[in-house]
Length: 124
Image 1 (cartoon, rainbow, N blue to C red):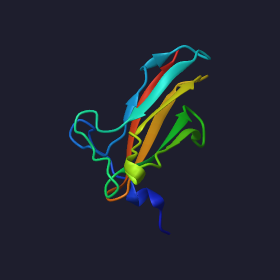
Image 2: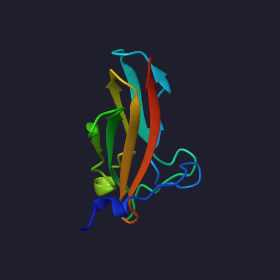
Image 3: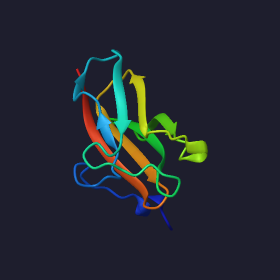
Image 4: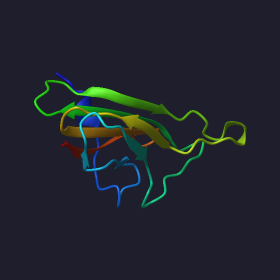
């Protein structure tokens, strides 16, 4: 059986411009809101042209002991130079968690495919 997971690429965002960067605290309080920001190209800029761009981010949370992750956010970037307009690939949302787990972020580059990053987060 084929799996979409075979297409996911990873790397260190400090050396690979396609890896989404997760900006979230390492520890949060249960039920307390915090900002979760996803960006790309923090250390090495990613092109943002009609020919080469980031199309979307998806963010998931997998709580410790849970069978499946839940989707927290989807950010879509639709303007890639059309009419000389551009959207910079950055997403921001506010999240409340009830248990510790792992945040997963995926980014899609129209030329280089899907990239993934993760960050553990502790709920105290």
